[in-house]
Length: 174
View 1 (tube, rainbow, N blue to C red):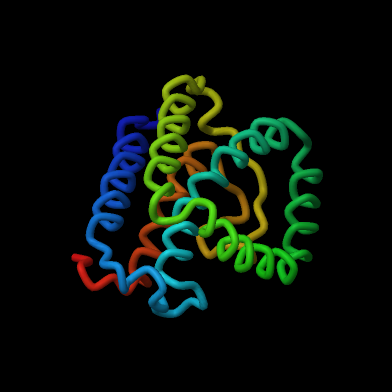
View 2: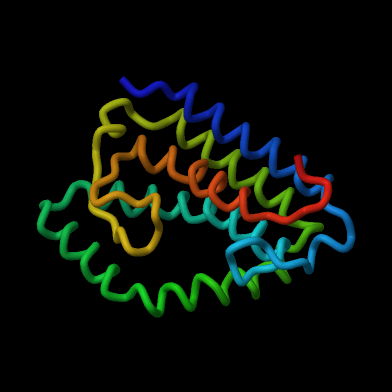
């Protein structure tokens, strides 16, 4: 059995931490370069939010692809892996652009809505669905495994968040 309370608590932990980061950032921090990425702190914070936005779509894909024969899912993941170079470009520039729309003034509220949606879907998943899995493009993200279950997908954004949190260079960060 999947311990939903652990997954729910991790979603809430990231939500609370994200708001603390937004409060801790000084005016000079937003445009400052992050450590180890080409993004500014503001762009990287959006990218961290985006990790949660992506999970909402991954849940839909998993509910469909997880019912298909293994070879279909494996082939789908291989096609996505083959498209890693354009994905990386879109991932980078998409976060640059989107941070202009969901900037420091809007991203906290957006994260609240996204995490609220994930919390509701987590609470309503049938227990049997948590073991359903599918193949993922492992070259797209270091936290994607070849095969991930529904439980793994709910756990994924926290790992992605923590990875990028370490790259922020906010002066008021703890």
